[in-house]
Each structure stands twice: as structure tokens, then as C-alpha cells.
Image (cartoon, rainbow, N blue to C red):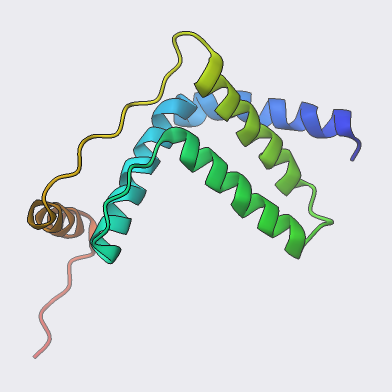
Length: 128
């Protein structure tokens, strides 16, 4: 796959994702909040994550996958796509990611995580 094919494939991928998942800024912003809650719950360290952080970390994931399997061109196509989305989030007027919310107290976070787990976890019968 040459550079033009790579960039065209990335453009096609990111344009179709908007119809499927909504705006990258909103989707990455929501992912950032999920990751922040997860990290806070498991490390007891609060860290602010943004939509840009999510896209950059996704590029790193794709680069690792490319190192493991360089023949799989899709990884570098995705890197180009994530780079374009970060650029759009950071530079296009009217496109912005939701700002991270201030972190709640740890006890409140623990309760929020319990509520999420109860809502989404499969129901299991108590074992005797």
C-alpha cells in the first residue's frame, strides 16, 4: 500500500466512523472519562484525560500492533486516521471535546463504580 492509498483509506475510515459512532471529540471524551474512572478505581490516583489523550494512546496501540505485525497495513491506516482526528479536535473551530469533570472524592467514585458494575454486570445467583 503506497502513501496515497494509506491516506485515502484513513480518510474513508474516519469519515464513515462519524456516522456510526458520532463525533470523535465526544466519543474520545467519553472514553477519556471511562479510562479516568478505571484508573482512579484501580490505582487510587486521579488523572485528567482528554479526547486528545485517547487518540494519542490509540495511535500508540496501533504502532505496537504494527511492530508486532508490520504486514498488516490497517494499523498504519488507523494511525493516520487518529492523527487526523486529533488535528481536527485541536484546530477546527466549533469542534471540541467535552472538558474533563473535576474528580469526585474516592468514596464517591467507589460508589459510582459499584453502581456501574451493578447496572452492567451479568446477574448471578448466590453460590451456596
